[in-house]
Length: 210
Image 1 (cartoon, rainbow, N blue to C red):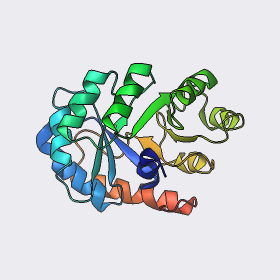
Image 2: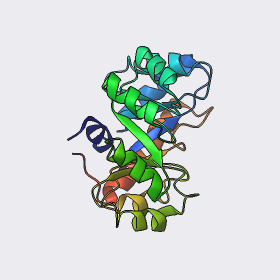
Image 3: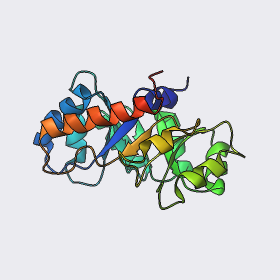
Image 4: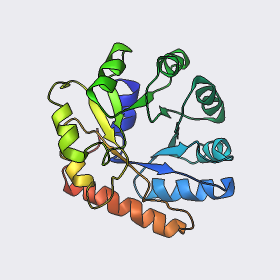
């Protein structure tokens, strides 16, 4: 397995987390890990996101990555903060090369055949399909898997508890990303329940850990 393949196979859902207050980070991460979702993506959309990564990285069992990474500078700062993998909404050559140089698992975003071909040219084989629903949903990704039979995906954007089974039913989908698990203001016990519900739905759909 490649490093990013191992990350993607570790849990059926990667929670995408937008957290304003770093003091909430550890409790959120602990709830998600306890609920069966140890792979966490912290979106770099708030001023305290790097501090959130640092706090979450202290939680036993958590593998914390940085999302919404747009350039090599953000990647470097995320790695310094403790990120164990990098997720981007797209793919550029400078960002892909920076990830390779840093030797950190990288999941770049694609929404078309052209995007995938660009990623393949850069040596990538695992992609974030984003924005999943807006880019055509399950039918669109199913069509793309025809000419690109040797690549793997993590659909993100519009994925929910009610449709995650449809995505996971595609053989080349290793996991999905979702924002519904830990919305702002939700208590840790609710976050844990959301995670447990997601894992149960994934297992019912046939997902099993690598």
